[in-house]
Length: 327
Image: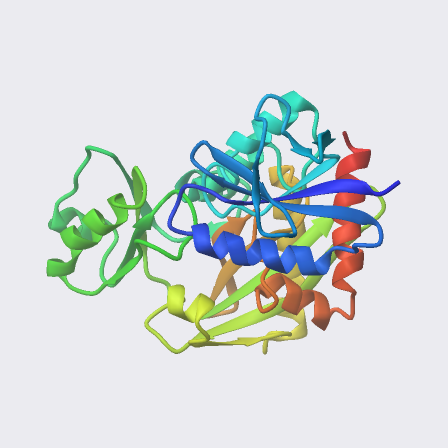
């Protein structure tokens, strides 16, 4: 009998639409001869299953089930592809843990830690990972222009510390831009990161592990056409994404080794993607860790899977079966 899989998407942040696109990508990647798939959309308390005929059926949040032709459908596995709360920050993971429903990604602790960019970078710094100088502002806190310039310098990035890096981000070049950038970031999240600019080559590396194997994907080099890797560069083609990256074999090996180590340090599960910037002297600097990376057909992970000569259906099967076996 086929297992029934929920592809969980939506969420409560500005990356809602991106999540829906990732869900469609994952739907296309999973082997439908092995699994019965349903897309489950979430926004606030509106949880529903989209049926093949286009109608929506409500999800019973008591047991994460829905009714189909008079029968209750229980999910065997949840593939979480929400970019932001509640799917990337540990909330949904805790819910599924209580229901004993296996899922695709990190558990509560790793998810909540990596969702907070400042906390994650400071944590990994303790293991010797290089990071940019940064300051954290919580809701209600403020900082003077002079302090930003003295402690972090210009140019710098001001962005939400929680969630993705597609919205609320500003590359600040002048004193006059500092306070508007902070306000813009606070409009997206209750914590704001002020981070030093690092000049270098941006790269990203995906990874997943199961009980049987460890898979570190080829590295992608990101060459944005814009000031930085913003929403348009990510999702509207305003960047060149080169896989494998145009870096030395030695640097490739070091980045892949570091990515594998970060996976283990965090206790990660499923596919993660770690973003870096390579500065002068081939120094590897962490930008952020993504535990629910984008999964559209043109996203980094599918690109890296293809470059590795792997079949994305096999990768999806690995993630699902590993999650179920670990339950």
